[in-house]
Amino acid sequence: MKAFLVVLRFLGVRHFRTRRLRTALTVAGIAAGVALVFSISVINGTLISSARSSVRELAGAAELEVASADTTGLPERDVQEVASIDGVDDVVPVLRVTTKLTGASTERRVLVLGVTPSFSRLFPGRAESVDVQGSAGGGQGLVLSRPLADQLGSSIGDLVAAETPKGPAALNVTGTVSGGAVSLLNGGDVGVMFLPAAQQTFAR
Image 1 (cartoon, one colour):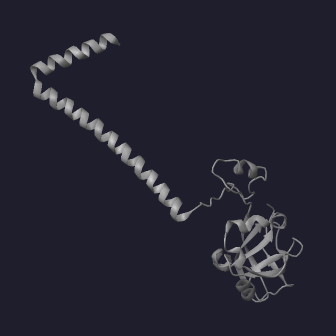
Image 2 (image 1 turned 90 degrees about the vertical axis):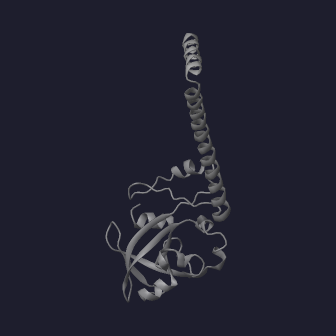
């Protein structure tokens, strides 16, 4: 390695003596190229850092969904694994199923959510404005958004038919909900069940 550097130095000095202008321009070109690459790297790093900082200030905390590649869902043991990842503040398990509900008046494609009491943490500041009529029926009932219940022609205490992997299932409407973030979910066509009941109903 030392011998190679000596030869390189000898050749450089020799060329500089015989072709000073060309050698100087070559050295200047190499130096300018290195400086350009370094500058671009610094600018890219600065822009990325600035963009991330701006997103954090404008949007606040991000909500990310961790989902299984198939319809069976994630094992419950994965909740703790996701929660242990650096930067994750909270983990909220949610089951999401799109199904057809048939009521007394019509049928609708509906997003049914299987949730736990921690679900409201996904919508800070909106849970207080939610208006709930009825209840979750001891954990086995279906709570519909009020506009959806009106469209289906179903009231509290009525049964609606739901398509499930095991065939049609009769679900008891035990409550209605409106306000808050309800209208943001699937345009308001949404029903909510407790997670264990939704898992059992939809074979998850």
